[in-house]
Length: 330
Image 1 (cartoon, one colour):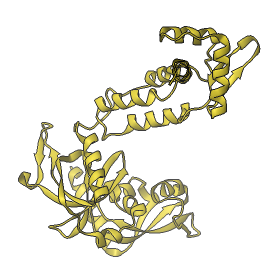
Image 2: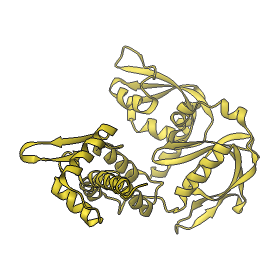
Image 3: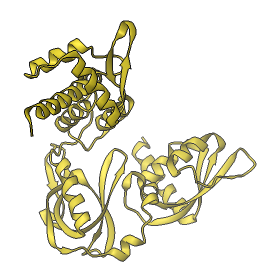
Image 4: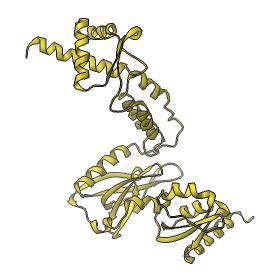
């Protein structure tokens, strides 16, 4: 390859990088500023060459805006991610409890680099991480990667599972014995990541919080429980499991005041069937994993929400209320 061709390619690539890093709809580059940048990279360029390069980049498909008149210059009009999209990603990472504070800051810096330097400054200026409730498990980011690999390979995994005691120290379940699970899906719910997998000893599907998993090993054997997984409706799984608590799954009929249509749709989705009762209320029937978290959700609406049936669930709710009221009887 001739030196002229090499110089032209280097000049084009450097111009593209300069425009991508330094320009947007609010900030443009002049020919002079481009020449200064190229000079700092050891590349000399005449104005005519820069004009030609800009037209070549535009013809190739880059969305470069040509400004004329008093504001003569160029700017990169669109990227793989627009400013609002980057802000959405940053906000999602900031609010994710399972991502540690250190990893949050690292990811936000990487996301910010996808925009111009001006957008990056704005994004990093809006970072509010300190003081937020974040995961204490620094390895959770890599847990997700390991579990994704196991799911893609259709292999089983083993891991240790823990809780925290009052001192913030890990306390391993099963006395530290490893769980053997066939992983099938990762579920994002209530700001946490969960693994949905087949628990071989228990012969049933279970979910596990990824940030409470430790020392994950991918086994050199195929996973089991495919028939159990096929019976699960993933789109409804987190809807049925309030707070992702385990519980017996029952079809529950509930009554709500009409003013609670919004919270009910937020919980069960826009396709939920709300049957008007003609008295300012409506009923809903859904498959629910009955748990204290489900009862707490119903009770949070006071007299505007009621479990209508089945009677066994009504009784369980009443017993739960009695147990709670006993704490405050004095």
